[in-house]
Image (tube, rainbow over all chains, first blue to last red; front, side, top):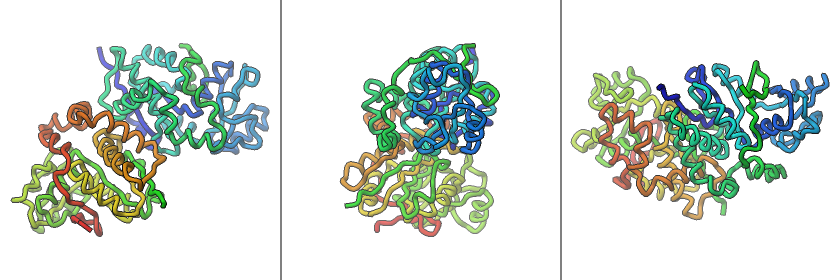
Length: 240
Length: 240
Protein backbone atom coordinates (compact mmCIF):
# COMPACT_ATOMS: atom_id res chain seq x y z
CA UNK A 1 0.00 0.00 0.00
CA UNK A 2 1.19 3.47 -0.83
CA UNK A 3 2.32 5.41 2.22
CA UNK A 4 0.95 8.92 2.32
CA UNK A 5 3.55 11.65 2.57
CA UNK A 6 3.53 13.79 5.72
CA UNK A 7 5.15 17.22 5.75
CA UNK A 8 5.20 20.20 8.07
CA UNK A 9 5.49 23.84 7.03
CA UNK A 10 6.63 26.24 9.76
CA UNK A 11 5.53 29.52 8.17
CA UNK A 12 3.41 30.87 5.31
CA UNK A 13 6.72 32.15 3.86
CA UNK A 14 7.85 28.53 3.47
CA UNK A 15 4.68 27.12 1.89
CA UNK A 16 5.03 25.65 -1.63
CA UNK A 17 1.56 25.54 -3.24
CA UNK A 18 2.69 23.67 -6.34
CA UNK A 19 4.14 20.83 -4.25
CA UNK A 20 0.96 20.39 -2.26
CA UNK A 21 -1.65 20.28 -5.02
CA UNK A 22 -4.25 17.69 -4.05
CA UNK A 23 -3.01 17.43 -0.48
CA UNK A 24 -4.89 17.73 2.77
CA UNK A 25 -3.72 20.94 4.44
CA UNK A 26 -4.11 21.25 8.21
CA UNK A 27 -4.01 24.90 9.33
CA UNK A 28 -2.65 25.43 12.86
CA UNK A 29 -2.71 28.78 14.69
CA UNK A 30 -3.47 27.76 18.25
CA UNK A 31 -2.94 31.15 19.98
CA UNK A 32 -5.66 32.01 19.18
CA UNK A 33 -7.28 31.82 15.74
CA UNK A 34 -7.74 28.10 15.16
CA UNK A 35 -8.63 27.50 18.83
CA UNK A 36 -11.30 30.20 18.55
CA UNK A 37 -12.70 28.68 15.34
CA UNK A 38 -12.91 25.21 16.91
CA UNK A 39 -14.67 26.70 19.93
CA UNK A 40 -17.14 28.59 17.75
CA UNK A 41 -18.17 25.40 15.92
CA UNK A 42 -18.51 23.45 19.17
CA UNK A 43 -20.78 26.25 20.36
CA UNK A 44 -23.00 26.00 17.33
CA UNK A 45 -21.84 28.63 14.85
CA UNK A 46 -23.30 27.88 11.40
CA UNK A 47 -20.39 29.21 9.36
CA UNK A 48 -17.48 31.64 9.51
CA UNK A 49 -16.55 33.99 6.69
CA UNK A 50 -12.86 34.87 6.83
CA UNK A 51 -12.08 38.34 5.45
CA UNK A 52 -8.69 39.94 4.94
CA UNK A 53 -9.25 43.65 5.43
CA UNK A 54 -10.81 45.87 8.07
CA UNK A 55 -12.87 47.51 5.31
CA UNK A 56 -14.42 44.18 4.34
CA UNK A 57 -15.20 43.38 7.97
CA UNK A 58 -16.88 46.76 8.37
CA UNK A 59 -19.00 46.24 5.24
CA UNK A 60 -20.27 42.93 6.62
CA UNK A 61 -21.03 44.61 9.95
CA UNK A 62 -23.10 47.23 8.15
CA UNK A 63 -25.06 44.41 6.50
CA UNK A 64 -25.93 43.03 9.96
CA UNK A 65 -23.40 40.24 10.39
CA UNK A 66 -21.71 39.46 13.70
CA UNK A 67 -18.06 40.47 13.33
CA UNK A 68 -15.02 39.19 15.27
CA UNK A 69 -12.09 41.47 14.49
CA UNK A 70 -8.80 42.34 16.10
CA UNK A 71 -5.51 43.85 15.02
CA UNK A 72 -2.50 43.00 17.18
CA UNK A 73 -4.76 41.90 19.98
CA UNK A 74 -7.02 44.95 20.07
CA UNK A 75 -10.71 44.66 19.21
CA UNK A 76 -11.67 46.97 16.34
CA UNK A 77 -14.17 49.63 17.38
CA UNK A 78 -17.00 48.49 15.11
CA UNK A 79 -16.58 44.78 15.88
CA UNK A 80 -18.86 42.75 18.15
CA UNK A 81 -15.95 41.03 19.85
CA UNK A 82 -12.31 39.99 19.48
CA UNK A 83 -10.55 36.73 18.70
CA UNK A 84 -10.43 35.01 22.09
CA UNK A 85 -12.09 31.58 22.10
CA UNK A 86 -14.02 32.77 25.17
CA UNK A 87 -15.89 35.30 23.04
CA UNK A 88 -17.54 32.62 20.92
CA UNK A 89 -20.18 31.57 23.47
CA UNK A 90 -23.26 29.54 22.50
CA UNK A 91 -25.46 32.53 23.39
CA UNK A 92 -23.63 34.69 20.88
CA UNK A 93 -22.88 32.34 18.02
CA UNK A 94 -25.32 29.40 17.87
CA UNK A 95 -26.91 29.22 14.45
CA UNK A 96 -25.18 32.39 13.25
CA UNK A 97 -22.78 33.21 10.46
CA UNK A 98 -19.81 35.15 11.81
CA UNK A 99 -17.36 37.30 9.90
CA UNK A 100 -13.82 36.81 11.14
CA UNK A 101 -11.18 39.36 10.23
CA UNK A 102 -7.77 37.78 9.89
CA UNK A 103 -5.01 38.98 7.60
CA UNK A 104 -2.84 35.97 8.30
CA UNK A 105 -5.63 33.41 7.96
CA UNK A 106 -6.97 34.64 4.65
CA UNK A 107 -3.43 34.69 3.27
CA UNK A 108 -3.03 31.07 4.29
CA UNK A 109 -6.33 30.07 2.68
CA UNK A 110 -5.20 31.68 -0.58
CA UNK A 111 -1.79 29.98 -0.41
CA UNK A 112 -3.41 26.60 0.12
CA UNK A 113 -5.85 26.96 -2.79
CA UNK A 114 -4.30 23.99 -4.62
CA UNK A 115 -5.11 21.61 -1.76
CA UNK A 116 -7.98 19.12 -1.93
CA UNK A 117 -8.95 19.87 1.67
CA UNK A 118 -8.13 22.72 4.05
CA UNK A 119 -9.08 21.94 7.65
CA UNK A 120 -8.63 23.83 10.91
CA UNK A 121 -6.74 22.21 13.76
CA UNK A 122 -5.89 22.96 17.36
CA UNK A 123 -5.37 20.92 20.49
CA UNK A 124 -9.10 21.43 21.07
CA UNK A 125 -10.02 19.05 18.22
CA UNK A 126 -6.83 17.04 17.87
CA UNK A 127 -8.32 13.54 18.21
CA UNK A 128 -11.23 14.24 15.90
CA UNK A 129 -9.10 15.79 13.15
CA UNK A 130 -6.51 13.03 13.39
CA UNK A 131 -9.22 10.42 12.80
CA UNK A 132 -10.67 12.47 9.97
CA UNK A 133 -7.27 12.83 8.32
CA UNK A 134 -6.47 9.13 8.61
CA UNK A 135 -9.79 8.29 6.93
CA UNK A 136 -8.61 10.11 3.78
CA UNK A 137 -5.98 8.93 1.34
CA UNK A 138 -4.28 12.30 0.89
CA UNK A 139 -0.75 13.40 1.48
CA UNK A 140 -0.81 15.76 4.46
CA UNK A 141 0.76 19.13 5.17
CA UNK A 142 0.70 20.46 8.71
CA UNK A 143 0.67 24.20 8.03
CA UNK A 144 1.81 26.25 11.03
CA UNK A 145 0.65 29.85 10.76
CA UNK A 146 3.63 31.24 12.64
CA UNK A 147 3.69 34.89 13.62
CA UNK A 148 4.26 37.57 10.96
CA UNK A 149 5.82 34.86 8.79
CA UNK A 150 8.18 33.76 11.57
CA UNK A 151 8.48 30.30 13.04
CA UNK A 152 6.58 29.90 16.28
CA UNK A 153 6.82 27.24 18.93
CA UNK A 154 3.19 26.74 19.89
CA UNK A 155 1.99 25.83 16.39
CA UNK A 156 5.05 23.59 15.94
CA UNK A 157 4.14 21.72 19.12
CA UNK A 158 0.61 21.11 17.89
CA UNK A 159 2.00 19.97 14.52
CA UNK A 160 4.33 17.60 16.37
CA UNK A 161 1.43 16.17 18.38
CA UNK A 162 -0.60 15.55 15.22
CA UNK A 163 2.42 14.14 13.34
CA UNK A 164 3.17 11.73 16.18
CA UNK A 165 -0.39 10.41 16.01
CA UNK A 166 -0.40 10.13 12.21
CA UNK A 167 2.95 8.33 12.07
CA UNK A 168 1.64 6.04 14.83
CA UNK A 169 -0.72 4.59 12.23
CA UNK A 170 0.68 2.53 9.37
CA UNK A 171 -0.45 5.03 6.73
CA UNK A 172 2.19 7.77 6.70
CA UNK A 173 5.86 8.25 6.14
CA UNK A 174 7.99 11.37 6.25
CA UNK A 175 11.41 12.53 5.11
CA UNK A 176 10.67 16.06 6.23
CA UNK A 177 13.08 17.64 8.70
CA UNK A 178 10.40 20.06 9.91
CA UNK A 179 8.18 17.12 10.87
CA UNK A 180 11.02 15.44 12.76
CA UNK A 181 11.77 18.71 14.55
CA UNK A 182 8.10 19.25 15.46
CA UNK A 183 7.81 15.74 16.89
CA UNK A 184 11.01 16.18 18.89
CA UNK A 185 9.86 19.52 20.29
CA UNK A 186 6.51 17.94 21.18
CA UNK A 187 8.33 15.09 22.93
CA UNK A 188 10.07 17.66 25.15
CA UNK A 189 6.91 19.65 25.85
CA UNK A 190 4.12 17.13 26.18
CA UNK A 191 4.58 16.13 29.81
CA UNK A 192 4.27 19.75 30.91
CA UNK A 193 2.78 21.68 28.04
CA UNK A 194 1.74 24.70 30.11
CA UNK A 195 5.22 24.95 31.60
CA UNK A 196 6.91 24.63 28.20
CA UNK A 197 4.71 27.31 26.66
CA UNK A 198 5.92 29.80 29.29
CA UNK A 199 8.91 30.57 27.05
CA UNK A 200 6.92 31.08 23.87
CA UNK A 201 7.04 34.63 22.49
CA UNK A 202 3.28 34.77 21.86
CA UNK A 203 2.72 33.90 25.54
CA UNK A 204 4.48 37.16 26.47
CA UNK A 205 2.67 39.17 23.80
CA UNK A 206 -0.73 38.01 25.03
CA UNK A 207 0.19 38.52 28.68
CA UNK A 208 1.31 42.09 27.96
CA UNK A 209 -2.21 42.81 26.65
CA UNK A 210 -4.05 40.81 29.34
CA UNK A 211 -5.17 38.39 26.66
CA UNK A 212 -3.48 35.31 28.09
CA UNK A 213 -6.41 34.00 30.13
CA UNK A 214 -7.34 31.61 27.31
CA UNK A 215 -3.95 29.88 27.06
CA UNK A 216 -4.64 26.94 29.39
CA UNK A 217 -7.88 26.33 27.49
CA UNK A 218 -6.08 26.50 24.12
CA UNK A 219 -3.63 23.86 25.37
CA UNK A 220 -6.37 21.46 26.46
CA UNK A 221 -7.23 18.43 24.36
CA UNK A 222 -10.46 17.35 22.75
CA UNK A 223 -12.91 20.03 23.79
CA UNK A 224 -14.71 19.30 20.51
CA UNK A 225 -15.20 16.69 17.80
CA UNK A 226 -15.88 19.33 15.14
CA UNK A 227 -13.85 19.45 11.92
CA UNK A 228 -13.87 23.00 10.54
CA UNK A 229 -13.19 22.86 6.82
CA UNK A 230 -12.90 25.53 4.12
CA UNK A 231 -15.58 25.16 1.43
CA UNK A 232 -15.61 27.84 -1.29
CA UNK A 233 -13.71 30.22 0.96
CA UNK A 234 -16.06 29.79 3.93
CA UNK A 235 -15.54 27.78 7.10
CA UNK A 236 -18.15 25.17 7.90
CA UNK A 237 -18.09 22.11 10.14
CA UNK A 238 -17.99 18.76 8.43
CA UNK A 239 -18.34 15.25 9.64
CA UNK A 240 -17.99 13.60 6.26
CA UNK B 1 24.58 46.69 30.55
CA UNK B 2 22.61 46.25 27.38
CA UNK B 3 21.96 42.63 26.57
CA UNK B 4 22.60 41.80 22.94
CA UNK B 5 19.67 40.30 21.10
CA UNK B 6 20.07 36.75 19.82
CA UNK B 7 17.88 35.43 17.02
CA UNK B 8 17.84 32.40 14.77
CA UNK B 9 16.59 32.29 11.19
CA UNK B 10 15.73 28.84 9.86
CA UNK B 11 15.72 29.61 6.13
CA UNK B 12 16.74 32.31 3.65
CA UNK B 13 13.00 32.68 2.96
CA UNK B 14 12.53 33.85 6.56
CA UNK B 15 15.40 36.34 6.70
CA UNK B 16 14.46 39.99 7.36
CA UNK B 17 17.36 42.21 6.21
CA UNK B 18 15.86 45.44 7.53
CA UNK B 19 15.58 44.01 11.05
CA UNK B 20 19.19 42.88 11.10
CA UNK B 21 20.98 46.00 9.91
CA UNK B 22 24.22 46.32 11.89
CA UNK B 23 23.98 42.79 13.29
CA UNK B 24 26.53 40.03 13.28
CA UNK B 25 25.23 37.31 10.96
CA UNK B 26 26.48 33.77 11.43
CA UNK B 27 25.96 31.67 8.30
CA UNK B 28 25.47 27.94 8.96
CA UNK B 29 25.33 25.27 6.22
CA UNK B 30 27.16 22.37 7.81
CA UNK B 31 26.41 19.69 5.15
CA UNK B 32 28.62 20.71 3.46
CA UNK B 33 29.34 24.32 2.43
CA UNK B 34 30.35 25.99 5.69
CA UNK B 35 32.24 22.89 6.86
CA UNK B 36 34.16 22.90 3.58
CA UNK B 37 34.97 26.61 3.92
CA UNK B 38 36.25 26.16 7.48
CA UNK B 39 38.40 23.24 6.32
CA UNK B 40 39.81 25.22 3.42
CA UNK B 41 40.95 28.04 5.71
CA UNK B 42 42.48 25.62 8.20
CA UNK B 43 44.38 24.13 5.27
CA UNK B 44 45.76 27.48 4.24
CA UNK B 45 43.52 28.84 1.49
CA UNK B 46 44.17 32.56 1.02
CA UNK B 47 40.64 33.55 0.05
CA UNK B 48 37.45 32.16 -1.46
CA UNK B 49 35.39 33.96 -4.06
CA UNK B 50 31.74 32.86 -3.91
CA UNK B 51 29.99 33.02 -7.29
CA UNK B 52 26.33 32.40 -8.04
CA UNK B 53 26.24 30.99 -11.55
CA UNK B 54 27.94 28.18 -13.42
CA UNK B 55 28.87 30.70 -16.13
CA UNK B 56 30.76 32.86 -13.63
CA UNK B 57 32.57 29.83 -12.24
CA UNK B 58 33.60 28.81 -15.76
CA UNK B 59 34.92 32.30 -16.53
CA UNK B 60 37.12 32.19 -13.45
CA UNK B 61 38.35 28.72 -14.45
CA UNK B 62 39.34 30.09 -17.85
CA UNK B 63 41.35 32.81 -16.08
CA UNK B 64 43.30 30.12 -14.22
CA UNK B 65 41.58 30.00 -10.85
CA UNK B 66 40.95 26.80 -8.92
CA UNK B 67 37.22 26.18 -9.01
CA UNK B 68 35.07 24.14 -6.60
CA UNK B 69 31.65 23.66 -8.16
CA UNK B 70 28.76 21.27 -7.75
CA UNK B 71 25.08 21.22 -8.57
CA UNK B 72 22.95 18.86 -6.50
CA UNK B 73 26.02 16.98 -5.40
CA UNK B 74 27.58 16.46 -8.85
CA UNK B 75 30.91 18.05 -9.71
CA UNK B 76 30.63 20.28 -12.78
CA UNK B 77 32.74 19.03 -15.66
CA UNK B 78 35.07 22.03 -15.86
CA UNK B 79 35.61 22.26 -12.10
CA UNK B 80 38.74 21.16 -10.25
CA UNK B 81 36.74 19.48 -7.49
CA UNK B 82 33.42 19.43 -5.67
CA UNK B 83 32.21 20.75 -2.34
CA UNK B 84 33.28 18.04 0.09
CA UNK B 85 35.54 19.32 2.89
CA UNK B 86 37.92 16.46 1.98
CA UNK B 87 38.64 18.12 -1.36
CA UNK B 88 40.20 21.18 0.25
CA UNK B 89 43.53 19.58 1.14
CA UNK B 90 46.61 21.65 2.04
CA UNK B 91 48.32 20.38 -1.13
CA UNK B 92 45.54 21.78 -3.27
CA UNK B 93 44.57 24.99 -1.53
CA UNK B 94 47.42 26.43 0.56
CA UNK B 95 48.10 30.01 -0.46
CA UNK B 96 45.53 29.90 -3.27
CA UNK B 97 42.39 31.82 -4.07
CA UNK B 98 39.54 29.45 -4.82
CA UNK B 99 36.31 30.16 -6.63
CA UNK B 100 33.35 28.45 -4.97
CA UNK B 101 30.15 28.08 -6.91
CA UNK B 102 27.14 28.18 -4.64
CA UNK B 103 23.71 29.48 -5.58
CA UNK B 104 22.43 29.24 -2.04
CA UNK B 105 25.49 30.82 -0.43
CA UNK B 106 25.68 33.85 -2.70
CA UNK B 107 21.97 34.45 -2.17
CA UNK B 108 22.54 34.45 1.57
CA UNK B 109 25.44 36.87 1.31
CA UNK B 110 23.24 39.26 -0.67
CA UNK B 111 20.39 38.93 1.83
CA UNK B 112 22.72 39.70 4.72
CA UNK B 113 24.23 42.80 3.09
CA UNK B 114 22.87 45.08 5.83
CA UNK B 115 24.83 43.23 8.53
CA UNK B 116 28.01 44.63 10.09
CA UNK B 117 29.68 41.23 9.98
CA UNK B 118 28.96 38.03 8.08
CA UNK B 119 30.92 35.06 9.39
CA UNK B 120 30.95 31.37 8.49
CA UNK B 121 30.21 28.79 11.15
CA UNK B 122 30.17 25.03 11.49
CA UNK B 123 30.86 22.57 14.26
CA UNK B 124 34.45 22.60 12.97
CA UNK B 125 35.08 26.12 14.29
CA UNK B 126 32.35 26.40 16.93
CA UNK B 127 34.53 27.36 19.91
CA UNK B 128 36.56 29.89 17.96
CA UNK B 129 33.56 31.63 16.43
CA UNK B 130 31.70 31.69 19.74
CA UNK B 131 34.63 33.51 21.36
CA UNK B 132 34.87 35.87 18.40
CA UNK B 133 31.15 36.65 18.55
CA UNK B 134 31.20 37.28 22.31
CA UNK B 135 34.08 39.75 21.85
CA UNK B 136 31.80 41.94 19.71
CA UNK B 137 28.93 44.08 20.94
CA UNK B 138 26.54 43.21 18.10
CA UNK B 139 23.13 41.67 18.10
CA UNK B 140 23.48 38.21 16.57
CA UNK B 141 21.51 36.29 13.97
CA UNK B 142 22.20 32.59 13.52
CA UNK B 143 21.33 32.18 9.85
CA UNK B 144 20.62 28.57 8.91
CA UNK B 145 20.95 28.01 5.18
CA UNK B 146 18.34 25.28 5.06
CA UNK B 147 17.80 23.32 1.86
CA UNK B 148 16.09 24.96 -1.12
CA UNK B 149 14.58 27.46 1.33
CA UNK B 150 13.26 24.71 3.60
CA UNK B 151 14.03 24.24 7.28
CA UNK B 152 16.73 21.67 7.90
CA UNK B 153 17.69 19.90 11.08
CA UNK B 154 21.47 19.83 10.84
CA UNK B 155 21.89 23.60 10.60
CA UNK B 156 19.32 24.08 13.36
CA UNK B 157 21.35 21.80 15.63
CA UNK B 158 24.50 23.80 15.01
CA UNK B 159 22.56 27.03 15.66
CA UNK B 160 21.29 25.51 18.90
CA UNK B 161 24.81 24.58 19.97
CA UNK B 162 26.06 28.13 19.30
CA UNK B 163 23.00 29.69 20.96
CA UNK B 164 23.49 27.57 24.08
CA UNK B 165 27.06 28.79 24.36
CA UNK B 166 26.17 32.45 23.75
CA UNK B 167 23.30 32.44 26.27
CA UNK B 168 25.69 30.74 28.72
CA UNK B 169 27.57 34.05 28.87
CA UNK B 170 25.90 37.05 30.50
CA UNK B 171 25.81 39.04 27.27
CA UNK B 172 22.77 37.78 25.35
CA UNK B 173 19.06 37.47 25.72
CA UNK B 174 16.45 36.08 23.35
CA UNK B 175 12.70 36.15 22.89
CA UNK B 176 13.00 34.25 19.62
CA UNK B 177 11.03 31.02 19.33
CA UNK B 178 13.42 29.70 16.66
CA UNK B 179 16.33 30.07 19.07
CA UNK B 180 14.45 28.22 21.81
CA UNK B 181 13.56 25.47 19.35
CA UNK B 182 17.16 25.18 18.10
CA UNK B 183 18.48 24.88 21.65
CA UNK B 184 15.87 22.26 22.52
CA UNK B 185 16.68 20.22 19.41
CA UNK B 186 20.37 20.47 20.24
CA UNK B 187 19.65 19.28 23.80
CA UNK B 188 18.06 16.13 22.34
CA UNK B 189 20.85 15.52 19.83
CA UNK B 190 24.07 16.46 21.55
CA UNK B 191 24.75 13.25 23.44
CA UNK B 192 24.61 11.25 20.22
CA UNK B 193 24.92 13.69 17.37
CA UNK B 194 25.83 11.09 14.75
CA UNK B 195 22.86 8.95 15.74
CA UNK B 196 20.47 11.90 15.70
CA UNK B 197 21.65 13.01 12.26
CA UNK B 198 20.68 9.60 10.83
CA UNK B 199 17.13 10.90 10.35
CA UNK B 200 18.11 14.14 8.65
CA UNK B 201 16.95 14.41 5.02
CA UNK B 202 20.32 15.69 3.79
CA UNK B 203 21.95 12.59 5.30
CA UNK B 204 19.88 10.46 2.90
CA UNK B 205 20.52 12.73 -0.06
CA UNK B 206 24.29 12.57 0.43
CA UNK B 207 24.22 8.81 1.02
CA UNK B 208 22.27 8.26 -2.20
CA UNK B 209 25.14 9.95 -4.08
CA UNK B 210 27.95 8.35 -2.06
CA UNK B 211 28.81 11.77 -0.69
CA UNK B 212 28.17 11.00 2.97
CA UNK B 213 31.73 10.00 3.92
CA UNK B 214 32.36 13.51 5.28
CA UNK B 215 29.43 13.58 7.72
CA UNK B 216 31.26 12.35 10.84
CA UNK B 217 33.96 14.93 10.13
CA UNK B 218 31.36 17.71 9.67
CA UNK B 219 29.88 16.82 13.06
CA UNK B 220 33.21 17.00 14.88
CA UNK B 221 34.09 19.99 17.01
CA UNK B 222 36.97 22.43 16.84
CA UNK B 223 39.02 21.17 13.92
CA UNK B 224 40.05 24.79 13.39
CA UNK B 225 40.32 28.18 15.09
CA UNK B 226 39.77 30.07 11.82
CA UNK B 227 37.02 32.67 11.49
CA UNK B 228 35.99 32.96 7.83
CA UNK B 229 34.42 36.36 7.26
CA UNK B 230 32.95 38.09 4.21
CA UNK B 231 34.87 41.23 3.26
CA UNK B 232 33.70 43.02 0.11
CA UNK B 233 32.01 39.87 -1.12
CA UNK B 234 35.04 37.65 -0.64
CA UNK B 235 35.76 35.14 2.10
CA UNK B 236 38.96 35.63 4.08
CA UNK B 237 40.07 34.39 7.48
CA UNK B 238 40.19 36.95 10.25
CA UNK B 239 41.51 36.86 13.75
CA UNK B 240 40.64 40.45 14.58
